[in-house]
Amino acid sequence: MLRPVADAGQRPAVAVRRARFVMGARLSVPGMVGTFVWGIIAGVAMIQAGMSVGQSVGMTLIVFSGTAQLAALPLMASGASFALIGFTTFLTSLRFMIYSASLSRDLSRLPPGLRSFAGYMTTDSGLAVYQTLSGRERRAQRTALFMGLNLPVWAAWQVGSLLGIAVMAYVEPGRDLGFLGTLAVLALIAQAMQVSLAWPVVIAATVVALIGVGWPHRAGMLLAVLVGVVTPLILEARARSRRSAL
Image (cartoon, rainbow, N blue to C red; front, side):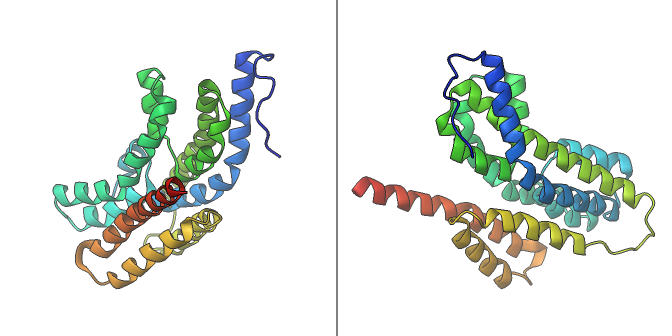
């Protein structure tokens, strides 16, 4: 059972931060499983899209976004314009702008390099848990907790993606491993569905994705992502309005 650090003033600050990092790392384990499998899929998809091993390794280290990578890869393979690829990845990454805004209060005092790295390795599962616990902690402890929740998930993604790339270097050409992507998505969705707010978001995005399944340039998927980003904002705004009216 989790409990705030009641003796923070009596214990060395470094020990308190270390304890918070370890606690975050333990809580990140459920998110690591789905992320690891999702990373394998991204690695496989990059090689199947025609990228070299070097290009694939570079993309997974720099981009660190399965959604953006898997949205961009079909466009890259089909020879789509740079503008369309950039716009697609921008739409699929809009949620990170919201994430950064929610983290600005806690991370604004970090050195620029560490702050940039924290933003780069922010994960969906890590941030979800962080937002439920960070209010109990002081700023330094919140930073350690954030790192503990996200750094292991980042590592799981990199290991999984590099493993997928390595496997494709030896696997039989033409072998279809796309079913693993479905399994990874199901693992991530199952974890996210534990939050009550996730249900209307998933339902709205699913309906839009099904309606737009035949649209050109994967426009249905892009619109579904946009709906998935906007829906929780609307629900949160309504919830705040109701609370303020009481």
